Length: 84
Image 1 (cartoon, rainbow, N blue to C red):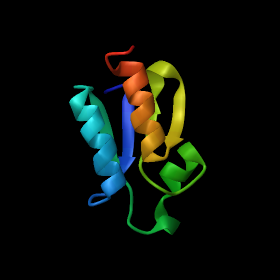
Image 2: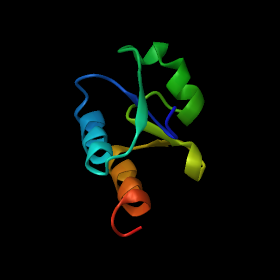
Image 3: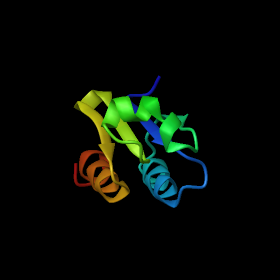
Image 4: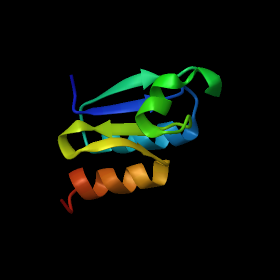
């Protein structure tokens, strides 16, 4: 099991943006596909306090439910990119 878990919805462009950064940085991660209905997204809501995706959890660095694709990409670059 990877340290990073990504909650995503297939076809979500913001999720694809985060997935591209994870792949670019060659990071191992698990994905959890959330239901299409926001009302059924109880697992991601429990993790992040909201029902939108993408959301990542990075157990190695104490990140428990980061949302907003731009914030996630910036975090991944700063933590795992060449500047790290």
